[in-house]
Image 1 (cartoon, helix red, strand yellow):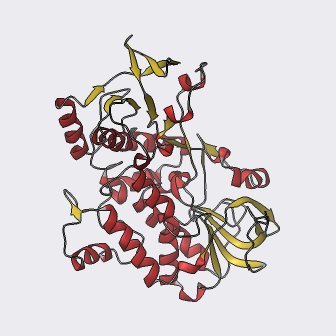
Image 2 (cartoon, one colour):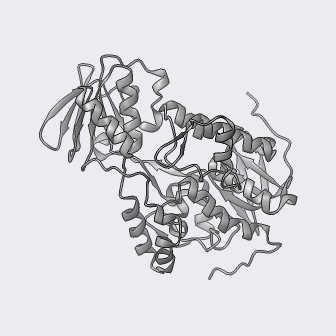
Image 3 (spheres, rainbow, N blue to C red):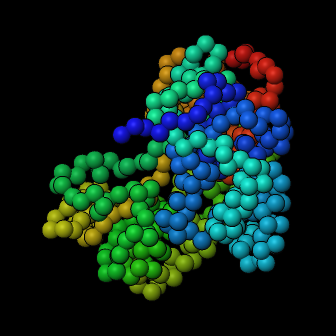
Length: 407
């Protein structure tokens, strides 16, 4: 079967890899600052459209609203989402901080894409490799085409799922759908009535999975390695401005910065509203919460899981969902293999040390999202982090020449 090929220029000024919220934030703010760059950049995403992965994630878990307040979104007008909500008649911003409903946010992003006229900039093909060639970067595409770019921004998310060690030690064969990571769970496609389900993890995703399974008539056990943490946001709001970031940026030791990021995020947490709903399901007998407890072994026996826990108990389940989060590790990103070889840079526990413009030292590659956390802070992967990254990258992109100093 012949692979789809596209009418692409031989060379472009800017390539953006990833059409999610970070990529969209970058493009709208870039066009606001320098409108004449239109036609000189392309966005590569295998889906062929903006925000598709984001929309799919929220739909799979039936998430009713975002965790970020209404001021965080991809449009340059900070109050745009609030005005959009008012125009629709209200009722789609949730307390306590006007958290946008999923449908509201999705429709607002569609409005942004239409207003900024960027639908056709997304090329429906994956980038498989970034190769340094002189002062340029060659992108190798999944359809075997290539294109040269003066500058490249990686805005894909680039996180790897974390799988507990005991999973690797399971010896008995089992059906794939009976043990999977939360990234592979689609509540829309499941019939769970009467099942016993084990969910491992104490983050917001595990909460959405638990409530979704209960709503289908399942009995859920939630296994959390410590006490269930309740926080409004992933990290304190002080990390969005100088209150905490001033000291963070003043810290020249990147190992210390990494430690500050871990302390600020402090593992998974649920919102107080989610915590209240989970406790309600505990009282109703639909959910059992196992705190300060971990799975240590699992066996698939007679079409059921037998799970040995750290407290010595042995429980039986029909399926296991791992809501164990993701880890950012630049050395595990296949797109960056050639970049790492050609331009080795310091890496702290998987995070690259970038320059102040989020540029990879030695070449015109820029990084957004969680991999840029050492320069952005603990909210790098969030919607607020997308704006902060754009503010650092855009001035470098719109300059006629970018300094090649690696200081």
